[in-house]
Length: 619
Image 1 (tube, rainbow, N blue to C red):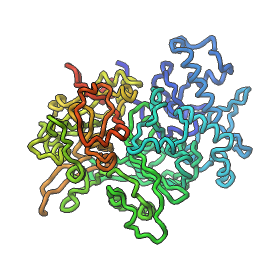
Image 2 (cartoon, rainbow, N blue to C red):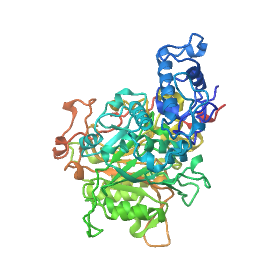
Image 3 (cartoon, helix red, strand yellow):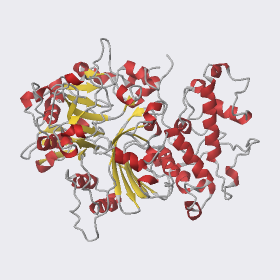
Image 4 (spheres, rainbow, N blue to C red):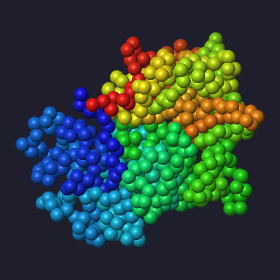
């Protein structure tokens, strides 16, 4: 069979933006590529399109000698692709008078369309490619011809429109968004869809500096997003887990970038958190907890989730730094998490958070840090932290004729670890016990798990390549075949994302009638012991919880958000007469919780199997 192996993510994805010589990886689909997302053309070369642009200048027609294979693609698609390539080539070259001559293509076409010239991540950030001084270019960011053209291109690509602050205000009380799907135009119109450039939009505030904490980072792509939004020179602190070529030790970084690779104590752990802290010039900050890596592909055709905090103002001068706490203790928990890194590069951020008012935050931070946690620390991290919060804030919904033990726990994730030889080894043992709280352990609810099947992936926007974010391996599954009985297909017709493979991770307690939630967790944590922790015996009194990875998520609880003991769901698949009354009714005065998958869940069909990443290793 032909190889479906996903190409290695180019380290310079998103840099400026293709040269005459091949400067980054060729799209593996070649002449069969049907993509129309500009980010794809930023990340991959398309030699056949570059060749057409150089010799054919009529933007409304195709050359008569078009390759036979390319003729099989709809002409409208090829014309759109050529339009994108021309735009990228044009915007790649600065029109500033101080442009370095050697960067201008020697083979420019008659209508002044320059050859594409790529800059490094350092060039994107510092402007070295055009030899512009920082002082002269700062005033032109977002308003000069080159910057405005690139910003306009990105806005068109992501369907960015409207006022981002109004969008955030309208998302209350949850502030829970999904990323835009490039190949699903319906998602571009959703009020609860957001793009990365919107997160950096001046409508959210004038950015002063930012902290990005993540697993995988493509530095060129990331800096390009800052460039598009007029934040080219703003200080950026970056904590990451997997090295991009531009981040390799010894490489010179742009002067405004501070990058630290975080290495968990063991090889089985990962720095898997996905969090941003944005600081603004008015001394306010904003916290974002996400499931997306800082790589181009994670923001294209994958379902991702984000919680975006309100803008958090500074405390008055002289205020006690213990002031400004959230009713959920979010501030203290965030400070505890950042302090666990023990990094001098975070001290300024820790100080700034101390000086910030978090009283408007109504979600809980649920995080993991590596180590064995015992004593009072046992309940601070991992699944034990979740259990502690559920015991404190969740109450029996008192649904008539439906005992709470019948409310299943639904887990949804993009990766699965080694879980043990039987369900009770961990999933239906300590993990279920924690997620069942405050139910008694003997009354533990059923568990339902969502993970895409092979057919789900085949039918995705990217075909088999849609499974590149689903690294579950067959050899692991063969040791835990019992898991198949718990698995359900990925379905998201309600949010136009059935064909956008889920990289989002979530856990929830759902009513049997599929009309209510008693809680919902958005997190970076997959279904693994490394992420959630395993109880272990210690020489000290009490239990210990051993965690291998860094993770972060936010817990949504109805008492804090809708003054009820349940969230109401807007489920068009449930007849109103079948909807059993639940809770106090106050939740129905609020917007329904915006769940991202379809209910009722759809079980695996006979013969279905989870998608295995091994398919990319087959020759």
